[in-house]
Image (cartoon, rainbow, N blue to C red; front, side, top):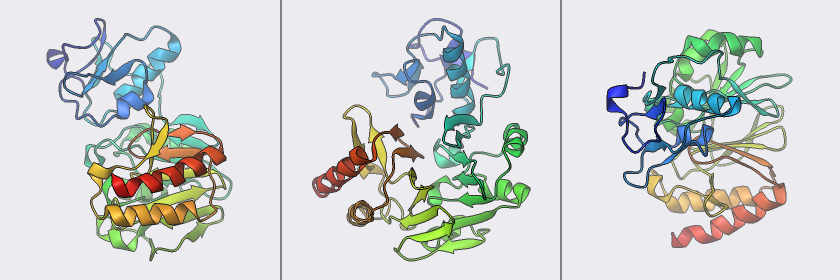
Length: 290
C-alpha cells in the first residue's frame, strides 16, 4: 500500500499520488502515460496531473497494481472497483501487472491462443490473477526470457501444471524448468512459438517470436519513445555488449518479422513490420559505437 505520509512533494495536487519509495523502474509510466511521468528533479515517478475520465482512472489503478514497490496509491481508496489485470492489449496478449521487485518491475504477459496459452516471464504471485487467468484458459507454458525476470514463475507453473522453458545458460535461475533452450540457434518450442537466443543482456537471454508477428523481447530490445527508434540497454548489459550486438544482428537477418514489440523493461511499440526491420538494422549499426 502506498504511504500517504511519504507522498512525493512534486506530484500534482489531488487524491492520486506516488510515494518516495519509487525505484524508477518505469512500469507505472508505461501503463499510465500522460498521467505518471519521470520527475526531472530526481528521476522517480510522479503524477503530473490527476486522472479525470473513467479511462484515466483505470490507468491510475493499473499503475497501482503494476508498481513493484506499491508506491502508487489513492488517498482514501485502496482497491479498484473491478480487477484491472490481466489487461487485454489485443491479439490475445494480456499484460499481467503485479510486477515483482525481484525483477526490478519487469512486465510479464499472458498470450491466449489456440493450442497453448503462454506466460512470458512472470509477475509476483497473487491470487488476484488466478481466477481471471483460469477464465482465459489457464497457462500451458511459461517462457522465461532470461534469469532476471523469473519472479514467481515456479508457483504459477505449479498451480496451472505448465511446462517451463529457459535457456540452458540461465538455467540456475529456474532449476524447476522442465525444458531447456540450448545454443544460439532458433528453436520452435511449440507450434507458432520460436525461441531466438540473443546472448548479451545475460548469457541466456532469448527473444520469443509468437504466431508470426508478436515479439517478446525481455530486456534485450525496447522502443525509445523520445527518439522513436529501437534501443538496447547498454548500461544494463550484464554479459557482453559485443555478443548482444552480434545476436541482434543475427535476428535482423533471420527473416522473423514482427509488428508488435512487447518488452519486459522499456517501452513496447506497435508498428509496421518494415519499420521494425529498418529500425532494428539501424540499431545494430549504432551499437558498436555506444
